[in-house]
Length: 328
Image 1 (cartoon, rainbow, N blue to C red):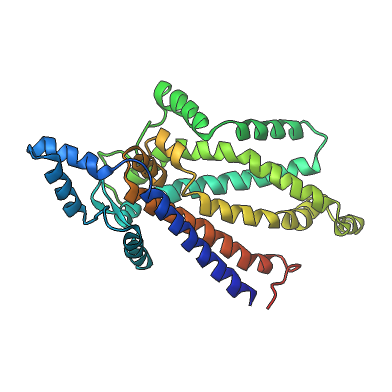
Image 2 (cartoon, rainbow, N blue to C red):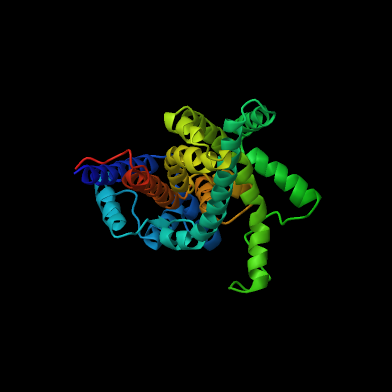
């Protein structure tokens, strides 16, 4: 069956990317164990050789073993759901994800839904009113945000709204003086700290969704069933919402699902700018400190999220669009 082939292809893709990630990271320059050994040697007054042996014993990992042996051991751990070990924090990557994942999911899912909703509505409007001032305005905005790096938008928001006007905090996920929990002060602090990252993501993506929706809606407007609906005397608002909108938004579902899957890997720059403790911030930290164990685990998480989002889209899209049927 076709769905089984897609599932097997998804699993093969995850395995292939995981293998390539392991090989690339293992062969990357730099030795974090040597850097850790230098710190221990200076702090305890022992030789670098003794300190290096202590580090290897402490993290439970021997980089001198054959690559295939290390790969098989790592793959066995991965199949059990263990994404690896952070050499810098000296805890499992799963523990780091448990702390960081909720913040990234909260900020990016909120920003993604906001930008998608606003972009789809704007795209539908400019598709219908292509000769009004809205069309060049939104198209120009989309071109500007597409050419502007994410971190530049984040920096501008940080400088003007956080550092100069001091309307928003410049870093963190909440006020450290508050007790985390489902209480109003903490929840308001979370929203206050997340406002700028959410705004940065939303501003960067509205234009792209609007142009994508415009192209999809324009193609639907040329269909015969739209002319037939108007010939029946239906109100223009009903034609736009029930006929144009419903059909034009279907191709956008794929992009939305892939965006959800890819949000784990696309959060590095903005979360770093705002020092927001999500997946992106920890990934940047792993790069800076050569924490290849954490880097490898986060890369695997991103791969699995993107592949699974693509798979789910392939499986549910025929249910959304009756014109498409999956082969048995």
